Length: 462
Image (cartoon, rainbow, N blue to C red; front, side):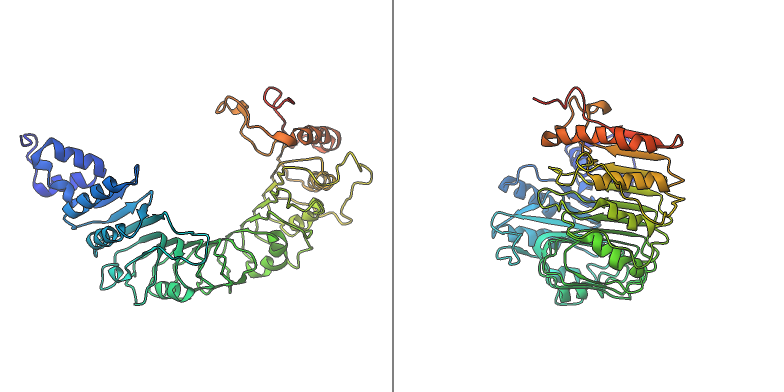
């Protein structure tokens, strides 16, 4: 039976169906023959793989081959497509249908049974047909996300409206990436993860809107060179990479994670990114103490340092040396420090409680309001750092000391039981005693001290 309700023009019905999720549009087509053709014009095709088998491949193939191909704006395979020699034909066919001059978003993730993506050589992978993005077919593309495939543009791609490019486990060279970037004048964000074929990343100056760069675990990478004038945030996790940031006067946010990152940040960043406001540093292996900074972070407001380590963490690292970082940040308002470890290898305050160190010249901090230390332990140098902050910060409002490594707690009501802290229970109790003995008496009445202790119900010795 046909639909006997509102007598609306066909283009209105088509528009209504285009606003529905694809699954609901298909269900409506099953209810009425009058609706059967409308889903064929659905602009957003989103596929979530539940059972990656031949039946799923056939369903997707049927949907795309019955789609008109007109007005597709988004094609997304959110869980990835399992790839082998037999599925290559299907992928080529689907992309041929979907990638038209109207498409704005393409998300294509490939899952393979054979390829080791932690190797720099990809022997069995899907080769993305770059020709689909030429001759105006990629002119409306705004977001391109490719995962676990080869991407080798040998021709100039027409991506003049591309604003975001995300490549993960993609085999591409630095020159090929440069070819894409040089034709993406509207690009705002570039994210590269596990792209082992890239040795050098060059951001050209013609990218006037470019503001965000992320680069993680591209192990062959040696140089990152930025000439874009408006880069505002940069997040990277690669060791021993030469950073040529140019005059990064617009950079406000920087995140870096690799062994020795704290030392590098102190030695190199103040002069290279003078207007930085938010800095996040993760260093799983910091062997050298924090040096005196050659210049200051005059505008830094939020500093996060994570020195989380397992057995590789150096017990010789001096937490008190972080004072030089604080002194070089006169505008700092928030300081987060995470020192969670599986074992405490530092000298305990109870083993050497005499002569706590103090800085000979006290630098008064007038903007620092909130300090949180996660994984707080009884290390003498950490007690000295905490006492320094209390003695030299006139604006401090809140000091949070978490002795449980930030684990989930039953006190929040979200969990029935606290997450176990294992071997660190003894040290957590020792840290609480250190706070009561050396810290509490220094806390002024204007400062709120919040101490997260082991749970008396969940964290008990067996």
